[in-house]
Image (tube, rainbow, N blue to C red; front, side, top):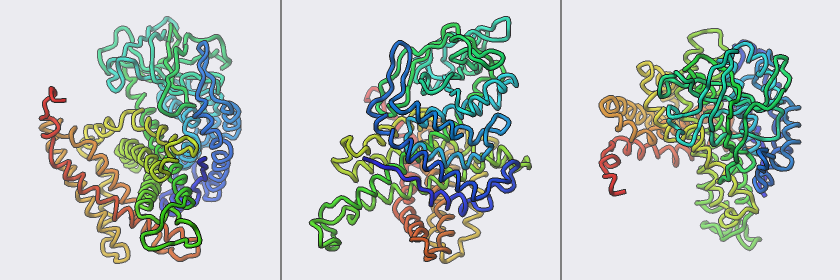
Length: 594
């Protein structure tokens, strides 16, 4: 059975060494976030994830959620675990102190979220969605709504969902039919049906707060006429106490490929009372605050699953005896050598490791810029960091979830037939990871967002937030002989990214299908360059510390960096060639031939 151990050593390296002085010292409200405090938080989070959540992962997957008479019951042990989880204050970690939260940086919260997703993704979805609701309501809710709902979302006694999808509209939300009829008291009556609602009904919290996209009777057609409403499952009185049910009911739950312990629901709103969040007909703007947070969080789900898959595969490869090393027996006293001696097994393990550690660094870097964008006193610094977050959100979501699924499949391959059966728990990572490439906007949609919205935004201003620091780093270190084996591959791949960007920008203006046909390959190219930037920075740190008696940590970091540069980054050449081939072979193919 798969077991999970939080990678605290690598998390400390990323937070304390890689981010270094970029960290939290000059951010208002974060002056007390010392390395000792962060270390204590991560240690406690590791105990919760390893000891409380991980043991429920397989049993929760096998039992799944139960739907009876409109009520959803989570698997055995989940209610008790959730109670322990909120009593430990884990839902309030990055919430504002004025709402009862701990006010910690998003960068710390991201590390904890990774651990939760590695240990038990299905469990993590429940508090993860509540975090998105908290942020959207904090940004756009009225003072009355904030006062009533934010403290209870922060302490976890209430949870939240985002209700977007309907049977006839997924990505194209302009087609939605859910109606919001204004009443005389300022509230609205919400009627309609939403599908694929994660955590839409469960038995973990006293109330479930739904953020619902709907259209008022006189609203413009399409996405310009969508508004956002807060609709509680249970009515809330002015003093915050719970009243009667609010016309919100679960019609069914889905039977899914993975995340079985997370309820995915059809939610019916039958004359339910809702409250406008933000401005009328501006619901998409408000919802994107939640969706962008959710997309970054889903990226971390992919990272967490990849880490768990890697750990399981590495442990198995050290123990499983099969065949002899091609270079001669490594364990002559045993009937066979462990499979970790075989080149192809090492290829798979190092691929997982290089992606995981690179993604952890990139995710932390983006999270740090989220903190700067939210907290820094200087307006220009806030804008620059927000530009980077906007640009890299689709990259993190798509790249990390692709990595999660790839790592799960590689782990099954390392296990062979034993990975395909349920006994070792490895096949669950593949099933759980698959949805991350789909929900919160499919990865193809993320690619279109990158080339269609983020690339041209403000005449390329978002791009400069990434291109400029990478170019400056290359220029600063290109003469460093010790770092040459990392800087030169980064520079070559970065050059490809720059040329591909210019080509798409030029072709896409005249023919949007050219940009669309290149989008997925461009996002992967962008993501690999971003990982290479992180790996080169980490290699620079490790070069000065190798051989320092740290159990080989920095030597392993350098070895993984070399594997990434030699065996993974060269994908950028093929991706560049594919992008430059244009749309012809894709779009000229007659529909009748499919």
